[in-house]
Image (cartoon, rainbow, N blue to C red):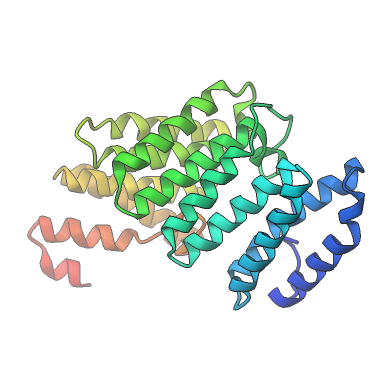
Length: 276
């Protein structure tokens, strides 16, 4: 689905049709793998279209059906998708509830997988994923203490993985912890920023991820009034964004280094530069 150029409604129609035709075949290993991937990928056209409320109805109906069949893999993915949809709608309580329910249907099995494959959101890797997402929800809600609890649990599960490089969102989770820590009394942000940078090298992270890291690290130094360090990192973020024409919006959030640069200029007593 990720490479499909069709409009969202056609993707949704195709996905639902495939599900209806092949649900009876879930015992087949290959069909099961396709359907689990399909369930996860369908979240994108539902979330990015006017069918978003239909998506809530659809995934809730699947939940009821597969709860009755005791199929925990389907149920955890459905709750996971619902959490993302509710978060997109700004319904944080519903999003949190759905993601916590998704956690309830995960076990501690570590699947052999690769970044982006369905196995990375099942078993123990799934626990890392859900706690990381819950931490992000709480950061967005301005609740760093709650975010810390989930991110700490996510990191604990991550550290128990034998094949950590197969969990592609590892660096992002550590960056979220750095952002969270900056709002807490026992600030360990620099440790987690450095850990994120180290992990990005191991994971072969894309320039977009480095641009976000530099922006958030700059924002941290700005908050601490370490303006030279703040400007150093924001220039690195701006350089990547401009030279590679990186998008302003991505799954990592909003990439807005000029906003941080404006804050640096204001604190530096250069309001005219901030306006530019």
